Length: 510
Image (tube, rainbow, N blue to C red; front, side, top):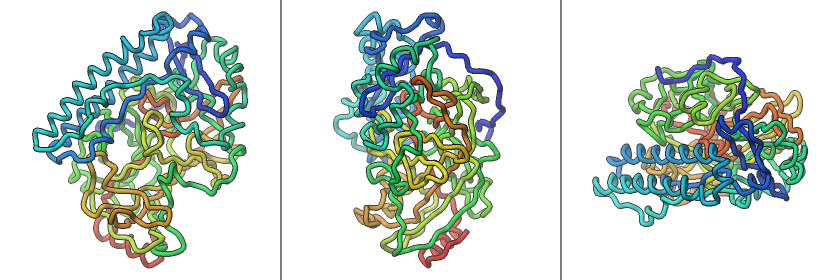
């Protein structure tokens, strides 16, 4: 437990040392080209013409998602190599962000000084992944070597990132406050050389929308069918709610025992934990099963965790100079949710079966901004407006209304595995009619609702002030589409059986 970060807030003000240029595309595209200068460059102002040619971030193929069949004996070694790939991207991104002037002088700088060396490092790491797999008799997927090359992202790639194609619900609100191309590149952001968001790392004005400008769309649905509600008027109509608090114990770390077991700072961003009180990268299943829990029902020692939300109001938190915090471009004051609802529901087509102990489920994608929407599952809204949901924007809520994050988890299980090599293929979402495909079995669906009291961000002259954002990998620029949620089942068998019986019998239990 010594590795968990506990909050001791400091009033130390954030002083921007960076110049910033942000580009917008017409028609509701994302605003996302952020650059920051080194301390030695802080007195210079960016040239708008040069800034337009510069790079916002780096996008690399997600090697882990291609590994669908890694032998169990190789998974620990492979996980450490995958975490190394993440750190290599982060180092390259930081170099990208700190070499603005060099990029403006040399059109080949990014390729020669950043992307080329990154490819060489990734090639060596991918080779070691293959060695780990073959050493225990496994087969390496074809084409792995082709995953080494990464791409730079500029404003021309807007429609391929995040959720720029979400259509009419973003148009209008996104272009307010001088966010259109002319107003944003002239005067608005370049006065005083002030960087937007987390030291130039996001979010930016185009990442926000006034909830009043979102048309009613029925509530949470996730992205591309991910995150559909499993329950309905038929089948197993009951529910089971567990109360595990809202992390008043302030247990946080930047590990992820699911994706990067045994790797310190494997997530590169802070998570809030409720339920299990011993979750870190080095926790074994036995340790988790025997841990303390913050849940009122002591039969629930499950681990529930999600990236923290920070407010960029000029203050820093205890991790301002540490991995997962300031070192990974996550800055600002951490705020815990003032409401946490953890609810398990049934399946509209029939009964559910018990989850196996230590079942791991990840919903959403922390890298969705560069990976695309294949695994994205985000729902953002405001209290009093929860029939209006956005997936690729942070909502600006009116006075008296709070920000809401909702996650509906996968609720179909392959009936055999508590995890899979890519942490995805052992579970799936229900189809539109509520059924499970591929012979999978219906399990209780976890629905997580988090409510935050955060001040409404203000957008003036293309700048966002007092922004809030989820923690992220640095190269994902704290985009709302990167929100995600994690669960490890450690209900004891009696409590799990009670849950299943309540759901299948149409009861609502706690």
